[in-house]
Image (cartoon, rainbow, N blue to C red):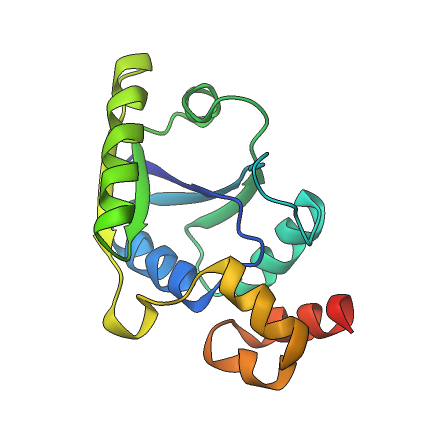
Length: 158
């Protein structure tokens, strides 16, 4: 069984993230969306809140699960028997970052990183941008995030 981990902070999950999840779910027997903690960012939602939101969003994908990652990604991968990390690329800056992380991960464990290119309509979407737009123009967020996230952002930001 091929198991892939799609790790991220997902604060919040965007349409770009969802597209990567949907595409990965067609490539692997099982995809685990792993909610991690990015110490460099101030989170809007708790890991538990994100897990609930993302679980609702991916409920139509039977081979996708959502989990919270505590500790190193490769250690979590060993716990769930995942051999693949899935990441999305929006631009060359993402590529350079992901290339370096992939190198570290493959040094730490026997894992392979699979990079999926963002579709053109998702190349400019980031969670940080969504939060910024949501803080001033919540009605415009539907272009960037699933409906359940729009509601959660409106509730949290207003």
